Length: 284
View 1 (cartoon, one colour):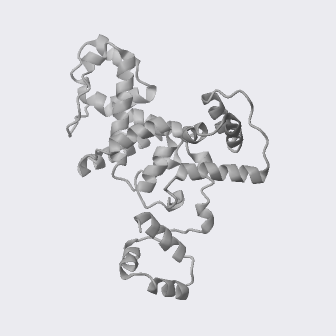
View 2 (view 1 turned 180 degrees about the vertical axis):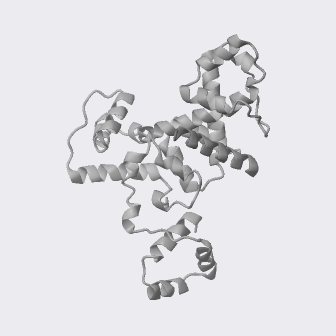
View 3 (view 1 turned 120 degrees about the horizontal axis):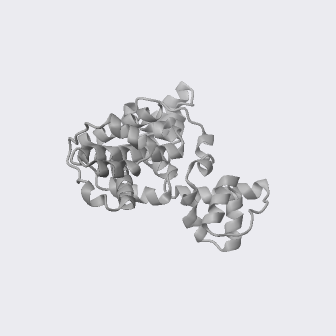
């Protein structure tokens, strides 16, 4: 039984009266009883928490593309019609479909939504409800707007930039760097102007990138993703699932590749602190 399944079991047992809970525990292997005791919190769970209906509005719409592309055009319209208006519009545009979503009955909507949820969850049916995630300093990422998660990622790239800015002395070059940064990044760079990288990260080679501002911008975004992914790699698998699905499927694929090469624990922990600093900065 996975750790997630153990948390779910403990949460559901918590709904039982003490006598019944004790009787059920006695039927379980000693190893499972011991594992449940090691979980220091009891989440408040009910069967309804596992309908996962909220995921239809939580995940980025791009996660439905692989499923939609496996159906014929007529069926795509039906599935898209089961989603909310904004998500439906985004998917219609992305798939270059011309018609408006069709009207479907409540029962039909429920059936189609279940199809989408099944494809979304795949083998993750033991996914913990968000309210019951184990404590993590990064749980807050799920409580902010998607655009703000993207802002956090771009702010993380500032650490790469700050550690090399001292090598740039020509005002023209400094001006060129600042011209591609967002207002957030400019302020965050000034706050971290004396930052020195304590760990071994691949150098940006700013002087080479300055000849192509667009290229520099893309490289900075990737550096932000690398820091974000490495920090995420030491989190629980449920938090990772939610965070990846909150972002678009393309960036999520990039983050999965980054997480597959886990950094040293102390590096990842430092990167978690950088995410928290970025979140604090965004609070103003």
